[in-house]
Length: 138
Image (cartoon, rainbow, N blue to C red):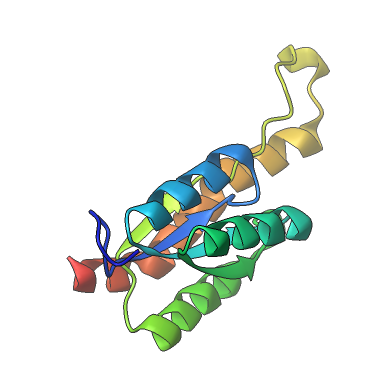
């Protein structure tokens, strides 16, 4: 799978154990990228791994639950990618926490905080950790 729009590119995809992230991982792999798939559901990540390998793609798994991850965890992910591949070309955020539509007066404050962290803060932390590598790749 070395030919394609993303041939030779290293792509980190968060939320790869979910539907959107898994589909994105497959698309990137089919386009020739080395995919680093991150997510919190190990069985789903393993199924994605098997599927991409069966298609002849390149994938590495990096289990990470963004809900509990701290800035150092994001930095470690980026450092491991750089150590393994020497570069990071793309970062795709597909991880999400959506507790459903609830009137504000009935919303669980902990669920709101979790959604804000996963959908905003964790993405910012990972992007911040990845920026030097992304800028070097461009």
